Image 1: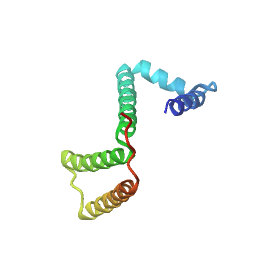
Image 2 (image 1 turned 90 degrees about the horizontal axis):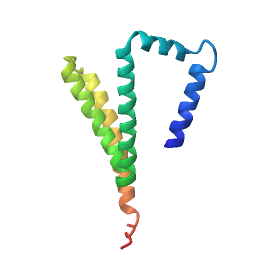
Image 3 (image 1 turned 120 degrees about the vertical axis):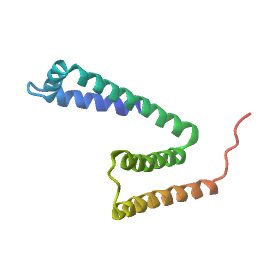
Amino acid sequence: MLGMNLWGTIYNLIYMFGWPHGIGYEAIEFCKQHPEAAWDILLYCLCGAVGQNFIFLTISRFGSLANTTITTTRKFVSIVVSSVLSGNPLSAKQWGCVAMVFSGLSYQIYLKWRKLQKLPKKRKPM
């Protein structure tokens, strides 16, 4: 994960500042003119970093199935809460699409769970 983040940062820095008219200079000027935007960007990056740590810890401690289940549940709850709070209810067709997507994801999770149940359990060393 560190390697991916490091290479992503290097590529982005080259893209943003690698030539005289790179977009990174415009972004810095914008943040100088609007310091509140810089704080928003900083908080967004901080939340992303914390989120990556939780994903890594979930996978390392509980496995990818638990992470997939958590992610799918979070997405479903996010759609429902967003629909309710924004005052824009979903149409019947949209609810049908949401149901199809999450049914498919749930089925994939179920198949993965069944596959894990068939594998022999590893004994933990004492």
